[in-house]
Image (cartoon, rainbow, N blue to C red; front, side, top):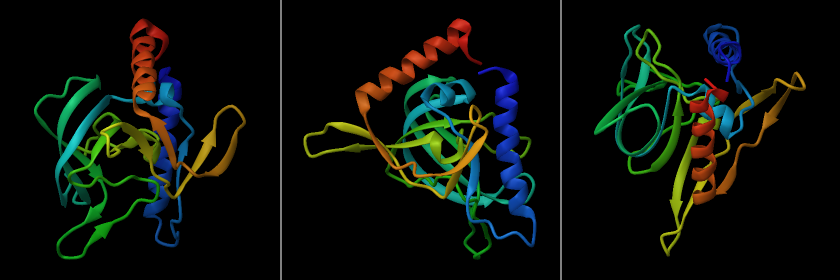
Length: 197
């Protein structure tokens, strides 16, 4: 993805978050640019497969609630993340009940296995899943151990750059694990060859 498209994607996410800060605005849905797997790969600073070891909510560098997820990385697609890796995601509820909920942003739960595409780290030390809920997939195993990737539904509106149209998205989908990983790896190869970021 070219810098201008990455900037547009980041700008759309920032605008969505800025609207959340407006006191008279009742946030009902997040807004993000519609991305396919190639788009997720091209826009990501980090792409990985991991198990969520633990989560906690604390204040970020600017005093806003954030969720710190400790991840045991099992595969790097983009970026070099080794050992337990802490990622700080905006939002969460502190033990005293104060919190911040951002529509369209996926949650992470201890014990779940995930594929996650993350933005560059902000000045507050936060990363956002690329495309909000589009950037997180759960790995689900059946009784025989076969894996699928599941993207959960989210309160998200998607903006299509080609049509310049906005639509409410039902992101819920199930993908064959091996096929999706092969597509991700092909997208990463395309990016490294200069076709993306």
